[in-house]
Length: 407
View 1 (cartoon, rainbow, N blue to C red):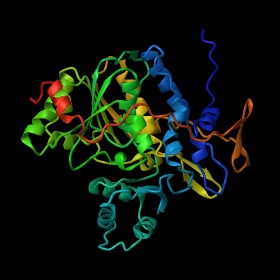
View 2 (view 1 turned 45 degrees about the vertical axis):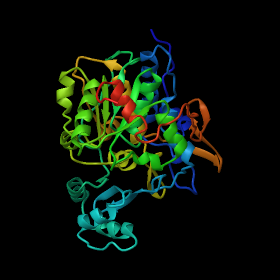
View 3 (view 1 turned 60 degrees about the vertical axis):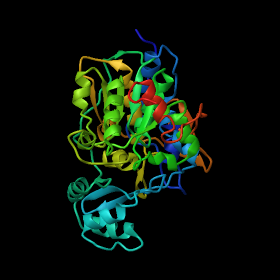
View 4 (view 1 turned 45 degrees about the horizontal axis):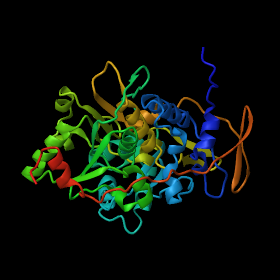
C-alpha cells in the first residue's frame, strides 16, 4: 500500500507562483479554485516515470514560469500580460482578448461598429453590458476572435490516467505550433531525448519570437528551425514529407487550416504517427483562444472582495502543454490522434473552491493550511540551455538530411 502523502491543492497553489499572480496589484494574492497546480505536478510525475527519472520537473512551478522571465504581476481583472480583460455581460462575465493587430477591426464587426476609436475596450465593454454571453460566444466563433463568456464548456475531456509510459528518446517531433502550449510540449519531449524540428511559414512566424528572448530560448534551445511556404508547390510537398517522417506531430491549428496546407491528421495517424492536436475547444469547434481567455471562459477565475480576477498568467497554455507531453510519453488503447481541448483541460481541474485565508504584507504573504501557514512563492524560472535557432536557420540542412530536398 502506498504511503505517499496526499497532495494539498492549497499548498500546491501556494508554491506554484500562480497564487502570487492572482489578485489585484494593490491587494493580497488569492488562492484559485480547483486543482490545476496539483494536476500539473501529477503530469510531471508521469513524465519522470516515462523518462526513468531523467526529466524531473515541478509541474506546479511551470504554470507560472513565464512571469519569472517577463516580470508580469497580478493585475486583477486584466491579465498579467495586459491583452485580456474580464468584462461584465448582461448575464455574467466574459473574457476578451485584444492582442492582434487586426483585432480592433474584428471586434468592430462583432459589435456592429465601423469605428471603435482609440479605445476599443470601451466600445466592446459597452456592447457586452447590453448582450448575453451566448451572443458573444456565437459571434466570436464566427469572426475568429479570442473571447468567450465565463462558464464551463462542453468540450472533449483529456484523460491521461490508465496509460502506459513510453520512451520518446530518438523519436522525431515536428512542431507546427506557436506561442506557449505546443512549444512547451515540444520542449519537454526534447528534454526526454526526442529530436525536435520547429516549422513556421514566411508570413506567420511564431509570435513568441517577439516576446521575452530568454523564455523563447528556454522552450526552443537545441531544436532545429524550418520555414516553408505552403503556397509554393515544392514547399507544400516538403511540408507533407516532413510530417510523414515524423513520429510525433504537434499542431495548434483548426483542422480546416491544416487541410488547406495538404495535411490531414487522420491520414498520418493511420500510418502510425502520434498526432497532438491542440485547439481552444476541440477539433469540432471553430473557436480560437489564447491562454488567458480560454482559462477564464472555461471557468477558472478567482474572486476577491472586488469581483472576479484572472488566475495566473495564461495558465491554460502551460497546463495544456504538460498534458500534451504526458500523452506523447504514454500509450493506450485509443488511437494516436489526440484531440486536446485547452478549455477541456482547464475545466477538468475545477473540482472545488478553497476557503484559504491569506495573511501577511506586501512582499511576504502566507496561506493557512491544515499543516500551518505556507509562504506564497513568487514565480520561478529555469535557466535556458542551448541556443534557439533563428527562423528557418536549418531548413536546407533538415530537408537534405531527411532526403526531402537535394542540396
